[in-house]
Image (cartoon, one colour):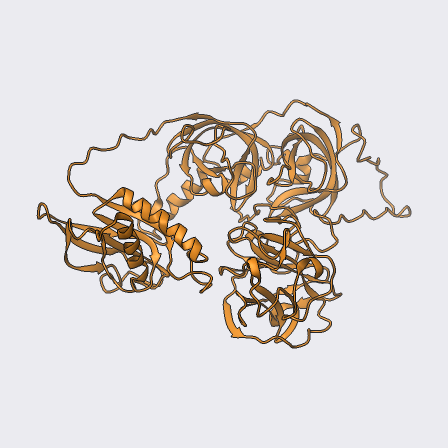
Amino acid sequence: MRPKSFARRLGGRVSTSVLAAALVLGGTSGVITAGPAAAQGTGLYISEYVEGTGNNKAIELFNQGTEAIDLSEYRVAVYANGSSTANSYALSGEVAAGETFLFGSSRAAFADQLDASSGAGLWNGDDAVVLYRGDEVVDSLGRVGEQPAGGAWGTGEASTKDSTLRRTGGVPDTTIDDAFDPATAGWEGFGVDVFDHLGIAPGEEPGGPTDPEEPEDPDEPGEPTEPSDPADCEAPAEKIGAVQGEGATSPRVDDTVTVQGIVTASFQQPGGYNGYFVQDAGDENDATSDGIFVYAQGKGERAAGDLVRVTGKVSEYHEMTQITQSGEATVCDTGAEQPAPAELTLPMDDEAREAVEGMSVVLGEGVINEAFNYDRYGELTLGSERHAQPTNLHRPGSAEAKELAASNLADSITLDDGINTQNPNPIRHPNGKDYSPENRFRMGDALREVTGVMHFSFDKWRIQPTAGAEYEETNPRTPAPEVPGSLKVASANVLNYFTTLADKDPNARGANNAAEFERQKAKIVSQLAEIDAEVFGLMEIENNSDKAVNDLVDGLNAKIGREEYAAVETGTLGTDAITTALIFKPAKVERVGEFKALTESVDPNFDTSRHRPALAQVFKDKATGEEFSVVVNHLKS
């Protein structure tokens, strides 16, 4: 099976810089003073800046010169909160003349488009960003040594906070400590989470320029051919199957073609895929797909049922065949009858999926197996039956585990939601309605007549839905069990409860500032107080020698109004930034002996550099004298 990595498209094309895969960059720190002159004649400058929600951070570098630039001497320096000390991120690779290079967060919504990335938090609106070549300033944004009022330079959309900024000219700012206002410094603002121009050279429209066809040489020998008018609905058009080809790659890459067919699905809405799927009557070859994705950002909107004639260049966008529409499509008819969907049955091999890439499809029946990405991306994994986790049945790395993993993959397909943004609200239920407490599902429930178009992105074959599926609750929730006893033991994920704040330490994973921390603390304390367990096992608490867990206990006791809880103090446990912890009610239970932790000292196969130690403690019920053990773990994924 060939590897594929068609990315979740966020508008705009991926830069054609030479780096084929994202580089994870290690941050370095150092004190850098303002001053040295710019690196003259580099031709490189910061053309776009993104400071969006969550981890949506990126800068676009543009090479306006005439020769390729080696980035091995370049670095991006981030001066946080007015500091004169920078976190620096070394770049590598090359950016061709007239091309862009994207650097940003590996956790951004558009991470697939980046040429280089970092897992660090990078910058906020009050942090200055400087591009260096060696110690020479190439370009900058913000003002080093200043923490601007309100957390940003500029106002409104032309602000360094919660906005995308694009350069209106190619003149770099090489003085890093001068006053800065984006609106007067050659930047235009576009608001929060606008990514549709990332990777597109300044002055170029989304979708990229199209190459004009070279005129034929009248003196060149050859058979005469009938010209095909792209706007003539009666003229011959190429079969989509001939454009797709029988293999994984189109035989027509870089050719300009004209196809004609019915729009089976359009995803041009905000947050969509900036294009639509077209399918023709077929070429009577079952090995070729009769459907294809047309990338049409900024073009006229098409609707399902439109009979369209499209001209554009063929490409393998992350190894998925597509046509980039040039000019406007010709609408030959509207309300045309949709082609009958190709019937899918799981399991399927990759060749069978490839043969219907871009076509209208229907999966007769599927069982919901996974919803890990459902809340964030609206994705569900379907199979013909419930899947067992391979390493739950077989030893990790064994032939049996690998065989079951391959079998599960062949028996899986992703049902997507037809949009391209994170955290959709409302989220789509697979029956096509909004998800709600009254309209929900569980793993193991069944779907029938799952209808959509066959798509590939994020290394997964997926169905982009065009209609709601038939949903049946086949795995109903069992009633709450009747549990005898007088003690309550509970677990709680405290969601990166860090007393070290990110505005003081950029490596901290929790709240950005004191105000955010107090909001987080109040919610978690209220949750724990309401549960009122005698023993809590906690996950995702800062691993800082019991400071965070004791802070949480103090807050919980203050909420209750008495000294009811205490922590099992462990000191630093393992090597990760977060750890597990135990808190308990000393009036109800008492510790028996010391805590134990699963580390190399207990099991030589354990590796604390890759896993968080499990934490165990024996307790005695003071009312009955009975002893019980509590073990809390938080496995690394």
